[in-house]
Length: 283
Image (tube, rainbow, N blue to C red; front, side, top):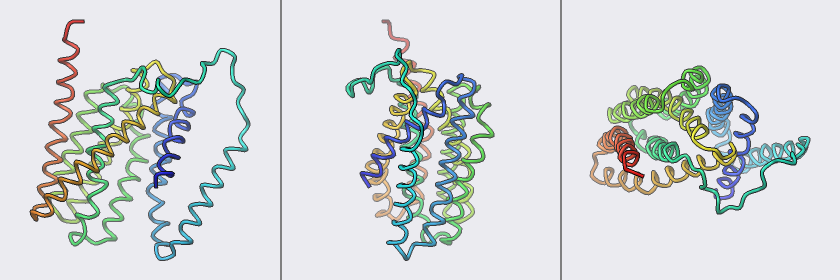
């Protein structure tokens, strides 16, 4: 699992920066959203294929290994790009956070922290509350919704102000979490679809704001965004997991989703408030 995570951390910034290499800021929303749509389409279809091989674990991992190996060989066969003489040198690792776009980094970490509460704990919560087939269909609809909505909204999101995108994204997250507290198949489905629309706006705007707010290369910016996502996911596992366990022991699990919904409203507001205070300070 650690090796797979490390591989994604290396590959994701590289291919995403390749998508926007040499394009104008106006073209970025469509290209980034197209790349994200391809990834979300894979997320939607992967579990379906995996379900067919669920009882044949050796075959499932053999297929996955063959796919990754084929991708690696395909990349090795790509023609090499000539390095320009005036290209910037490879920078040392210690400069990883140099030129960081602070607000997009913080909002991305917060977005992933709240989103992963849904992604990590909804499956446990749904057991006994809705049919497994319906839950699987809802999670597939989430990924397909992202794959469809983000390219359709790309240009509008690109022109949208960051606070507006945050309001839509975190607002949809809050509504979705409240819907989960209903505890029925219908409310869970409504919550999943609502979060899908909100994340389509918020995740894309986070990346666009990071690119616009940094002078570093796109590869470095996407690497910083990947780090922010890792921070958020880690907090979700530690903080969110502890909270979920506490609510589960108290047999009031719907309250967990109401707590997360409250965080979706309060934490972004607090973050923007702190930023305004910092900007007002002299010097």
